[in-house]
Image 1 (cartoon, rainbow, N blue to C red):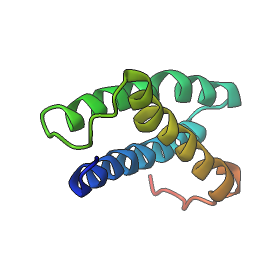
Image 2: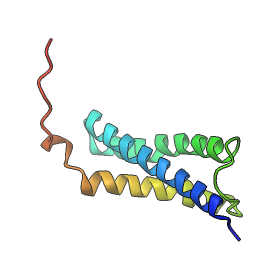
Image 3: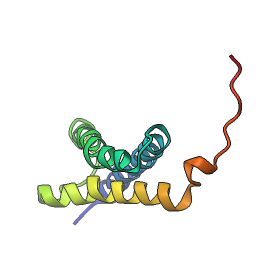
Image 4: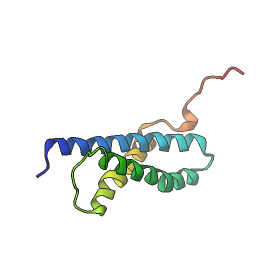
Length: 106
């Protein structure tokens, strides 16, 4: 049985990873000129960063329970936050071209 502390630790990991995935997706959508470039970065760069973060958060910091298998850990702590973060950015944030940025003084 999972203790409440382990469940909270898992929620912290998923929450931090979702926040990072949403912000990173937004950053790549704003900075890159092509739509496919964003998808490539979301598929290749963000999972690597989340994997390293998972190793740090669940290893030395001891957050989260033992999920039993590497596949379950990947799905819960990496794939789910990427899907949630991308969904948050695409469906709930305005399109980057619709956002008006202030003029910068040079």
